[in-house]
Length: 280
Image (cartoon, rainbow, N blue to C red; front, side, top):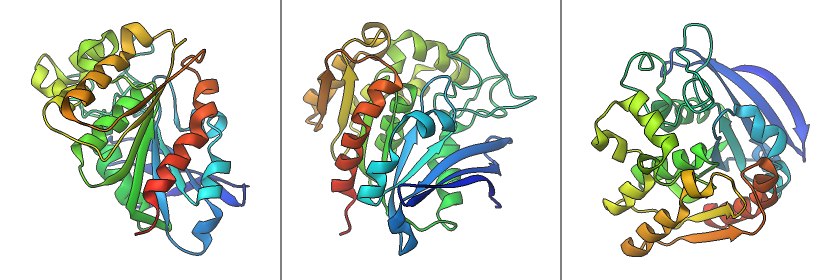
């Protein structure tokens, strides 16, 4: 499958790429960002995938996430896909929390979203298979992270693919989408009324059902306006405690839900991943 280079620029000794391809999973063109650190010029480097939140594209973290310096320091590639299919003929909805920009990293089974909303297949299968042969990436040394809806995606993708990701982290994730308004709205529209299907995309439910991660780092701002109604990190903390799942949950005083928060702790997360993605 061919990849079109939209842009390529030098940054911190590495290369920031914006790329596009025709996706079989979504049936649409898909755009994504890939940062290759300077170490990629001499051999394969570990890969950290970042899944973005509601309303975002690949560009939000690329422009505001402040990851390149840390990735260059630690020799880690950074992959940032879009959050949904887009374009004419792709179903959309009123509001920011459903439709284009709000794919929730599931494969929709319900009309009108089923024909294109296959973000689970895209991020778990198609995109990794696409980049692996074209770029110097050590696919046996992968980590995954994300923010909000993307934090939900990172947790559930990792929990459902044991052994693929050596490191998992999240910024203000939606930890129990089956129990909060964002998730109830999206899962009803994309997956229908069957809550068993919802549970397969719910980090708390997956942990309660026996899924495990090597360990987990979560940063959450205590001034986040979505904290009490939508994010509920206490549910993740309780599920991990009951299951014996290692979790480092850091409540960050005064921080909100924005990229000011994410960019503040991005280097910490990259260093945390780097320690777990080292060779060997």
